[in-house]
Length: 302
Image 1 (cartoon, rainbow, N blue to C red):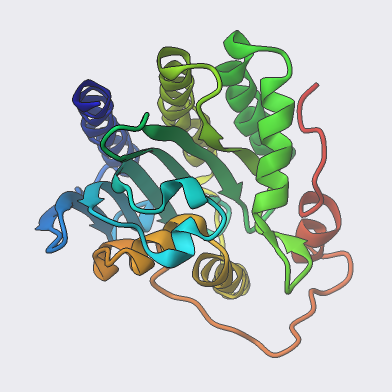
Image 2: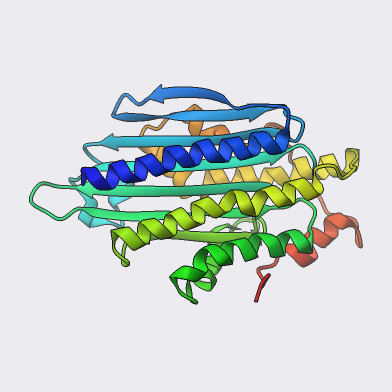
């Protein structure tokens, strides 16, 4: 299984490099700071963070490769076949928080997991995807985001994009608010039924399409004028991002439960956020449009 891990790791390290380069180019001012780290229980990674840029207020692009002799009980509760197995988990996870409220926040993650036990076949799978969280809705941006996601999926079957688009809509739903986190994208997990080569190829296709999905949106919106009202709404809506990540996100929960590096795991949280009691948008406003039009799962592309 060493070959599986090494080929995935090589791709993920290169992916991190390429995404960071694209984000730096789009910002035009700030660069990523790298913080390499090791995990006492096994493994490590490299965290890259960009702050106070011309375009991006905060962003992180993390690579991690952690391993251990035993998974926590919470991770094996619904997967009894993993009990007593050693494991390795590799991934690149990123969140980009722009300054301008008219530029959406974006998130992406791709990962590979493998659990082994002497005398038994390994259990492995791929997972990942990406999603977009606008503060002010824009139909052109939503269509571009989803069209790029669809094109990444199309070579793998006509049913792949609709399946993983719906999974994303369902997954990034804030249950206690009964609303979507954003306008979705792709989400897949436990992917192994295609065999390693095809499953890995799909993961690569999704990962490689992220920067093509996001950069054109940033380029179109980063010079849009905004004021205190838009900034306040952005900070309020960022609260939804925090709530989802801390309550529901699988990657965050897995990282914390397996003794991951807290600073890197919580890198995804926005730098400035606030909660206002029972805040309601003004009827007919741009803010109301986000709720009434965009925060509703729909077919953005045919």
